Image (cartoon, rainbow, N blue to C red; front, side):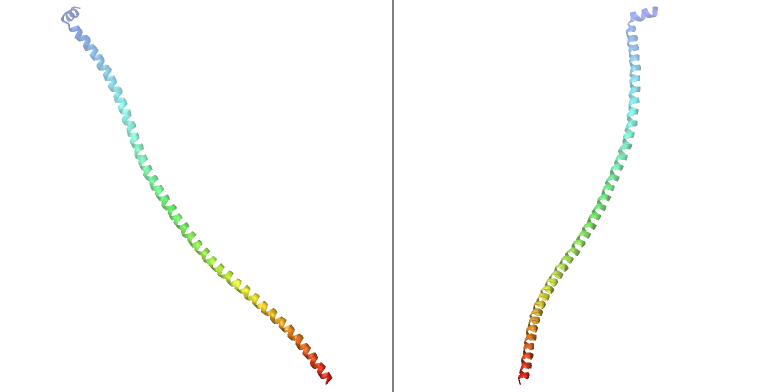
Length: 149
């Protein structure tokens, strides 16, 4: 008690109270620092996870770009082949059309020639009939002339 009284008179109790308050604040700060350290540890752990995910994403994006490039190359190659095939088919069709046109022209000319030959044949057949009739008339005249003689 005397010591307390002496401290009070000397004014050290204020310092002791402030020391106690400071120690309490230091304990409080220590606990805050521990919480901050825990939070930092969690953040660092999460940051490491995110870094791994970032690396995976970067690798995925690179592989996806490569895949798309390969797909584009395949599609482009397929398109070129299809166009070449289409060009070949178009060329064959064009040649076929030319041949068909020539054949149609030849058929028309043959048809015209047949009509001309048929017309001549009809003319010749009519001439032959006339000549037979004329020959028969002449034979009859000859026979009559022979019988009159």
